[in-house]
Structures are given as structure tokens and as C-alpha cells.
Amino acid sequence: MSFVSTLNEYCNLLGCSSKDLAERSGISPSTLSRYRSGRRTPFYDGESIHKLAAGIVSIAQERGVEGIGTEEEVVSELLSGINHSSTSFSRRLDALMRKLQISNVEMARQVAVDPSYLSRIRNGRRSPADPQGLALRCAEFIVARRQDRDLLRDALQVPGDDDGHARSDEEAKELIARWLLDR
Figure (tube, rainbow, N blue to C red):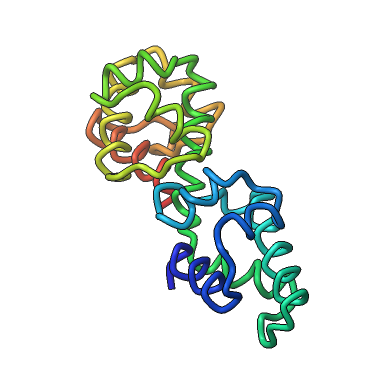
């Protein structure tokens, strides 16, 4: 079950509104609304999951709802619906851009996305609609910036052939894209 489905199922079981859960969990109502609609997903290992779980368990106890489980069980259930690879993608893209000193504006221009969208992906507030396509476009741009190859190899340990270099631009693009996608 997806994170959105799991969260909404908990709200239905508890008979609670988004406002109730937002107040009890300490998460803003607008953020919770985005979680419940699927427009936003919390970080896989972020504190929002724990806040939500604490709020869910607290409401269940207050209302005498049985079978919700412990806070740890609720965390586990919520996490089971989150795509861990999108969090990994966000962190890797952010690390890559930081190490290579590429700004959001510069990368966004080269990969044909809005800089604010790219910023939200980098900080984990959004998942890319097409992670593979974005990874490939980012990789193409980085390969075109030949001065970054040694930084990639040294700082991010992107693999290559025996001497640590990709044999061709196409191979370098593929290696970088696979690294971004954690494959």
C-alpha cells in the first residue's frame, strides 16, 4: 500500500480529520494536506514520519481505537509505502551538485526544468516525475562539463574502468545516471 493510502487509512480508522492529526503530530495542516493528497512525501528517514506515528497512536489511545499498534509499528507501516529510492535520488543529486558546484539555475536550465522544482527535488520535498529521464539529462550535462570528471571519480566514487575513468561519454552518462538512481 502506498504512503498516501496508509496515511488516509489511519485517518479513516481513527475517524480523525487532517486538522486533528496535524495538531496532534505537530505537522502543519498544509503539509499534512499535501501528504494526504500525494503531492508531497516525507523523507524516508525524516522526523515527519515519527511525528505522524506519534500523532496517530495518541489519537487512537484517546479515542480507544484498538489494533493501531505501537508508534514503531505505525512508523514501519508508513515507511513501507515510501519509495526509498526517491530519497536516495534527492540526496545523491544534491551531493553531486554541491561537489561540482552547480547551481539550481544552471542545472535546471540544462535539463529543462524549473529551478524551484529542482530545488524541491534536491531537498526531498518532491520526487521527480521521471527519475530516469532527469538522471540521464543531469548526466549528459555533467559529462559535457569535462572538467568535472576527476571530481566525480574522487569525490563521489562513480565507477569507471580499471583506471577509474569511463571509456566513453555514453558510458560515463550511464554510470552517472545509474549512480543517481542507486542502481
